[in-house]
Amino acid sequence: MEKTDKRTGSHASEDSAFSRFVDDFYPRYAREIWIALAVVVVAVVGYFGWTWSRDRAEAKANVELGEAYVLLREGNPAAEASLTAFLGGNPSGLAADKANLYLGKLYYQQQRYDEAAAAYAKVGKTSKAPLIHSGALHGHAAALMQKGDYAGAAALLEELVDTYGKRTGKPEESLEDEQVADLSPAVPNALFKLALCYREAGQNDKAKAAAEKLVRIYPDTREGRDGAQLLAVLE
Image (cartoon, rainbow, N blue to C red; front, side, top):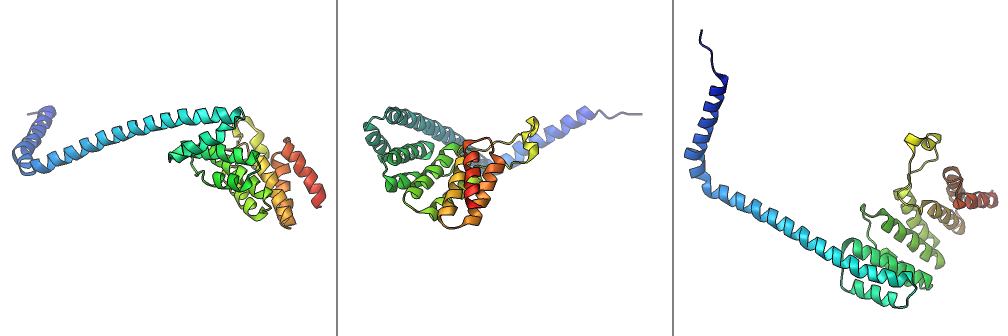
């Protein structure tokens, strides 16, 4: 009884397919094949070129921004000029967000609340740097509170708490394998400020709910203790 060599049959099938490609398909579509390959090569080269250029630009921006940050940290009056000059070069992405955050903080320290709010508002929301965006929301809200715009501040604080607050105060969250962390350390303070904004706006029910949430989720923090005192006043 004859046996079929499966390996030989497979090779024959592959040879046949290759022959059809060389003898029939390629001559008919050679131009389209080479155009497609050229497009792929150009796209790959372009992507790596763009990535290289972007990385160089980001590295340069970070160096320049680092110099401005050192001036800001030292309280050097030249910090404002350095930051505004940096932003005058129309940087983009994370570097621009950091610069606007730093400038907002500087203006806030100088009690220039309109300018602080404007700088904070320019910080874009990005999942790559939640601390930058949450910090801008927090600073922007604080500037609006100084201006007496409690409704505007409350809207920003609500966004901060809803976006970056992950803790719920449930008992199981205290277990080691179930621990939940907020995406920003500013959440407890934002929640306390939110309760104050509601109170100033005459929305005592919302103020009480925010203070109760603060006491329940963050009992061991300064904000949690402040929230308990606020509750005593609201009740």
